[in-house]
Image (cartoon, rainbow, N blue to C red; front, side, top):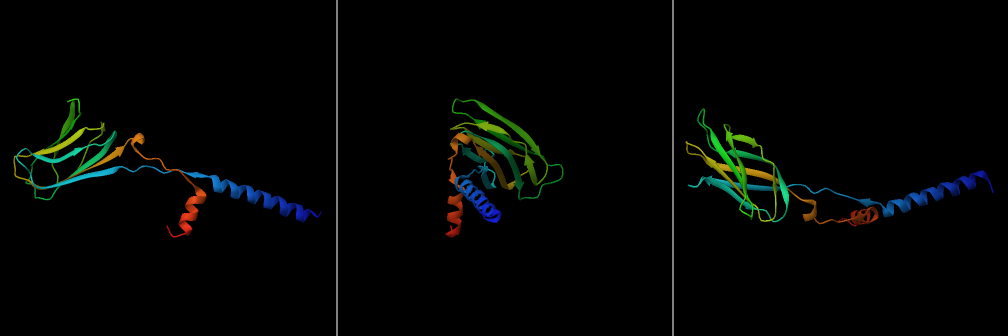
Length: 160
């Protein structure tokens, strides 16, 4: 048998092995944080602009606040973030905000049934309060899906 035929058969065998590996390769993905957002046109008497209960374990990873009203010079708004557990344990912080838009330092671990409460307090009347958090569910709360690479390629070919 000629060397060229042997080499071609060897290359065909390598190509077949690579094809088989692609058919059994697995793909993983990440779980993105879930946004929690609220808007309050007028601040209620108790100052609470957002309430949320967590359905599973996870953590709050970031937050921001936007005020759609003009702030007078030297106005300070106290933003209180409180997390209450089903056992009655409360954790939280109060953050002074001096601008219409402000990132708010917020990193809290939360469990099933924990309740988040955000309130604002200011001597001046304020309105149009936007608040947003990013909540990352724990890996145990996420549904794991595994696909073969060949399955993904097949679905893609079908226009899915």
